[in-house]
Image (cartoon, rainbow over all chains, first blue to last red; front, side, top):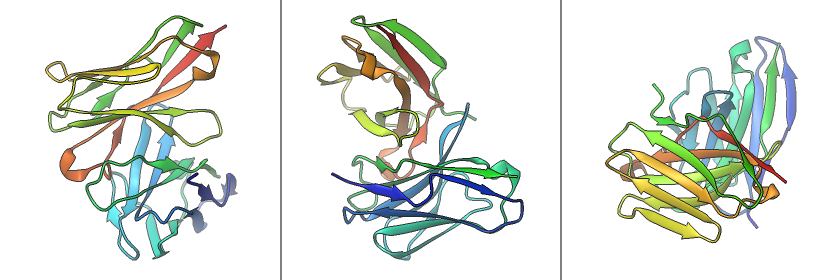
Length: 115
Length: 114
């Protein structure tokens, strides 16, 4: 079974803090994604990566950056957390290259609260 | 601007009956559609998909119907079971982007009443 593991299920941070959300997948997938889920807004794509050291902006990249130094790991970084970044963050991975339509496998999510 | 809309935030259905979840989209370039299911405290899991060359796709108790002219798709669950209680998201993408750029709806919470 594919496993996508997010390092923290719950985090509480203060405004202005730097926040790292880590995601690891164990199926050698090329593509990895970060989404956030908010009530009434569904899931929105923040960033994705289709190869090591490659990244592309999603629909809402402002205030975020990402890092993909190894194929299995994709990190989401909030350089200076703000209260409007309080959300559920979901990591996903998929096999295949760009433009594929394979199934996305999601992690369990990281609920971030910024005070 | 919400390009994928799920107008019913919640739906309650008696066990054994049919559940119908609806989804509308506005972007005529969308040609690949998926449904995901999400339990509390878990990530979404893929349920079923359909491409625009089809108008129906079936997988066991789950059937997705696509009406391109109406820009509407629906998910039918027959018969509904208590384990189907979850939040269901529809999602869409343009073939050029595969599912890197999936656009999700806001979700419908389905409750199956025993």
